[in-house]
Length: 154
Image 1 (cartoon, helix red, strand yellow):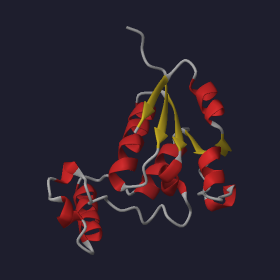
Image 2: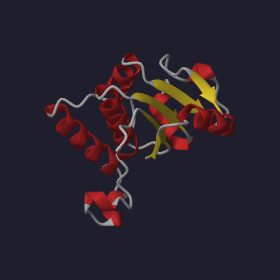
Image 3: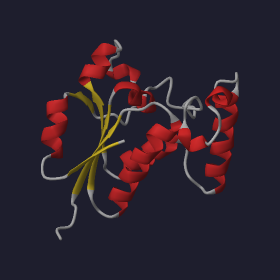
């Protein structure tokens, strides 16, 4: 079997459980010496949004992974409580926060890109994003960048 040399990861969800899997995959790829590029699209843009990336919450309504009733997930404050709970557990395991994780991954040479269609849809500009974002690119640009590697959608 051929060794994977490059991964391109699309992050489309703006919740804690929607962002972390892609960051973990990218970090692991870089640790194994693979090229890694992250493509943030739709609500995944929150992970790289200058004003939002420090305020990502766990999605509690209709989240089957929490094993709680849907109505309980909708109780006011439940998302904040569950987010704090998960963050405390991750801190004990020395898992960095989303902003720290993204900075670490970018520092290893991974590429971070915002989806042009989503940026246009939400009326954003390059200035809305953290400094580690290397550009706003089209889906075609993403596929061209991903050529010869594995594409992972989270």
